[in-house]
Length: 415
Image (cartoon, rainbow, N blue to C red; front, side, top):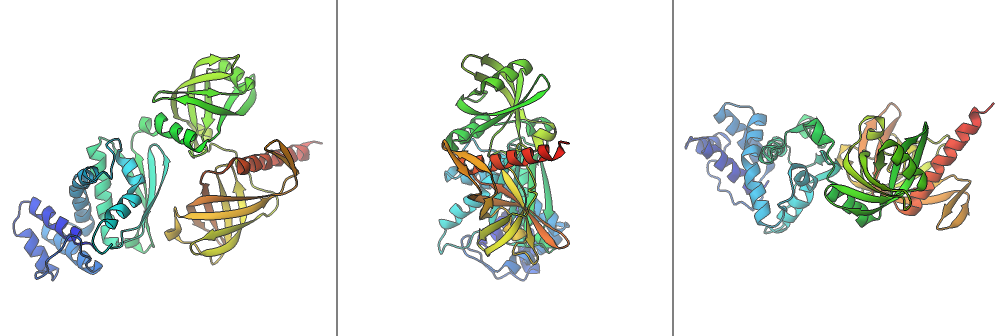
């Protein structure tokens, strides 16, 4: 544990207004003769003992003291990060948490002797939610909660932090879900941020409408965007449905939750629409922005991860992610959450059109993904994956697989 922790504790206790608090806590922790260098590494148990001692001095629990210390440090760390050019002025609470692992790595890399940085892995699931796992010193868990509260207060953002598992309770990691505790803000979409990614990654948009009782869904292309609106080109059928409804729903590959928007202007001849008032969608569509199917026959998925190579069975799949079933004992525990994984599988198809070429038969696909959830069951482990930028070929194959699955179900229902 870095000496910075101990020096922060000294400043925190001094700020309580009792000049004797720091030397008293050092004595109770058996560290009265210890001097601390901010960039030197010290045993974790010294930090545990000092936090316990400081709690006794303050008449609080170690968790309460750790959270108060984290809150005390939050603003200072924010200013230090900005001064060092690590934190852009435009970032707010969830942006900082989204990049926490990278920020720690860059900070520790600049220190003498290159001490090992605490390990944080995070995923931004939507504008109003960042989930992350923390794998390092258990003594710092309460500090993280305090820092999150400090960021929320600094930016005027009410934050709700849920810690589903914790190292202090025997888990190999602490997992946090941090959301904006504001129903309206949870629906907010940072149009510039999200559609800059669409442009950068050349992602396809998918639109959903109802027209005379029929569901209309086609792909579209992003043409332009600014902070308030996007301009898109869609199919003739989608344009007619948009005109009839005055609104549309759309999905973006990198967002796990769908969007809704008002059709502000529409040029039917060119099939160009200007969409405004983009918000995260409510209802069933809002919580799943892509059709997900369970294959009727077992499909083997080959996985490659830092813990090794192994196989599982496909539970279900969409263009944004998949669920797998792994035999027990599984190589994964919570320490693998949000880590990258490579997967490959053969998708059984009759045919698929790829680059204007008709390909017949099964198609092999390979993709990168992140481990989003793990769930232990009686005889297996279920793993949920979020795909990382699937390519156009992979998207076409998965979409064709879903369509063939629908066709087979429709045929089976006919008398």
